[in-house]
Image (tube, rainbow, N blue to C red):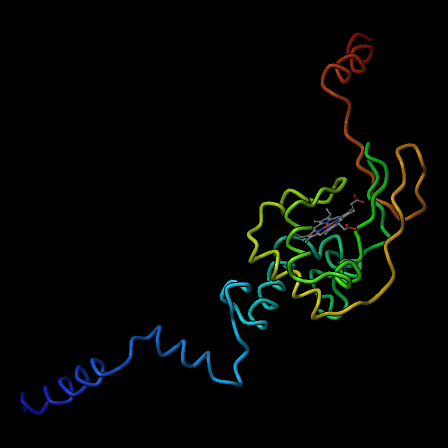
Length: 194
Ligand code: HEC
């Protein structure tokens, strides 16, 4: 009984030892003609993997919140083919009024290297978190780009930026910071004194 139980175990050990190292086997599988090639320029990811990561980032890094009309209002239920076309809802504050760009049109005239350079050094007005895009890894920036390319161009360019003091058309979101504490105290004085 004991001996017969040991036989399959020994056979398993032998077959594992005869196996190629997992990495080598995986490399051979990737080299099969039907599999898209993952190179160092794509950070070891296939095109499908890059696009899937871009989709994940657009969901969790807030890109859809501003660049996809209706996304927050629908609880993130906007179909993917309508993503990232920009928005005509303005963001109004001390910087003027800005409009989330149509990122799908932005990507049209770029290739991987140009996008990486552009996004690595991205500087915009608020409330766009350009710092977040600059802080991403190149792999993440490329993933977002490949998502934009896979979605393809759609929609119109967002409305042009308006200088501070220019009244934007509706709809717009107003960033109206409360007065600094000193000014708030001064304002409150007559009330508490009276
Ligand atoms: C809070 C809203 C908001 C969020 C979140 C946001 N954006 Fe933006 N984005 C904007 C606005 C507004 C502009 C226009 C800024 C300007 O006019 O200077 C902009 C501009 C941009 C631009 C510049 C486009 C151009 O014309 O050069 C890029 C690229 C961009 N966003 C990418 C992203 C990505 C990628 C994400 C997710 C990581 C993201 N944005 C998240 C609001 C947002």
